[in-house]
Image 1 (cartoon, helix red, strand yellow):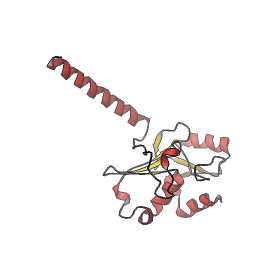
Image 2 (cartoon, one colour):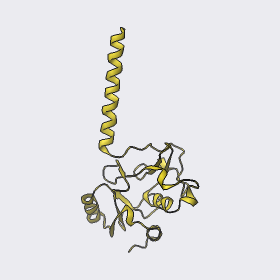
Image 3 (tube, helix red, strand yellow):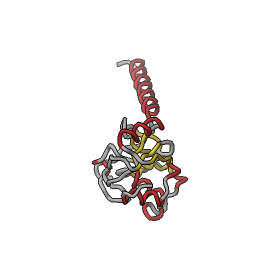
Image 4 (cartoon, helix red, strand yellow):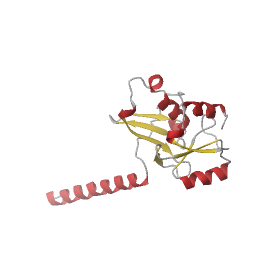
Length: 168
């Protein structure tokens, strides 16, 4: 194979990789997948067993913490000293949740969360993540949801209420 052919193949491979990466970014937030032994830092469950519910906090240094649902992710975020001593919110690069409908990753800070529905997650009652306000409204109707929330509206007290199945 000539040097020109090798160069052309290398350029085509680089172009294909860039196109694939752009397509992945256009579809949602890119975070690493949990490995087969990754445990939720809040409850200790093996996260990869629940791919439809995975939430991930990705740090700027490249390491990630995975959760078996948004509820445990919120517990973690509300009490970093307990669940991740030495970690700081300003060191987080991305926070992602799995959209209920298309199972793609969405930015947790822009997602919509429904509570009080007839859909249960791996740990019972859950904050069901949805990519858009329209999807949240559809989910509310289809699954008898009680309330729709944005990321910043989720408080530690509300997480406790959801955990206990007591919704307001």
